[in-house]
Length: 292
Image 1 (cartoon, rainbow, N blue to C red):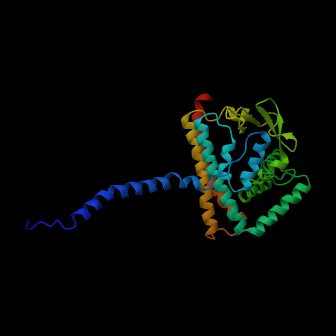
Image 2 (tube, rainbow, N blue to C red):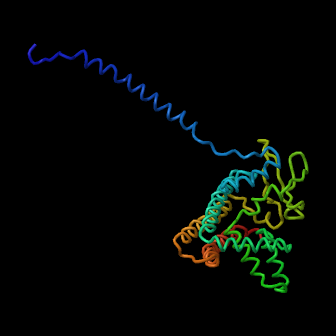
Image 3 (cartoon, rainbow, N blue to C red):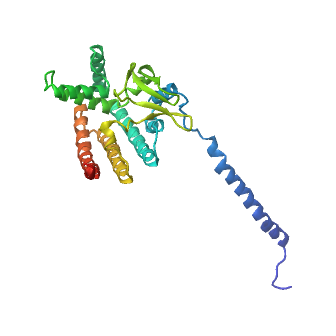
């Protein structure tokens, strides 16, 4: 018939028939990549918590592996609000570790001198951990500076927090031990002595058969003002977020060359941290006015 071309019709129909077959094969390849390939990616390192001793070793390993952001995994959570707060703590811990690494890279000589001073202090029986330095500063303050300037101990603790916030955890397996209390509870010991006596810090086994560090929420100084409502937990989260942001901003200033030494770093850190901490503290304390 004039005007109608039938040549090549069979070939054209075969192409049309093959089109959905090709699409099915492409879809199959896509599904293989979508579900099989991710399983071949490197999985996050697993940290053992089957015994109190494994928990202590995992605390040390996380810090040495540069996984401070995962420290929250080792703490016991009472509810979902606490779990969310601990995840925020984990992000803050990770940022502090990144800040410490930058400080060590930019001010290596000052950090080395500070570490040498800490070693000399330890040899003389003085406190070298962050908690120990803060306690020493408080005792000096009560004694009305009879043993020197109490601000020195606080400044030293603050410098240590900035340059090596997890120094105590790096030697956890050597100095931390667990004393069995019951089948599901153990006391955490530092150099054979209870932490935070007379109340202590406990380790507990949860229903997943893993051991966790239990935050001492029943301490008299904590229990009255511990977060309980959703709003209180939210405010506590804001505090950790403000510290996380301060660590990020401080790291950027150091990398930009705006701060010449550790003294300036410590001063800038205080200027960044104190104002939001005070404002958030006021907001948090207002939650308990009706209880006073």
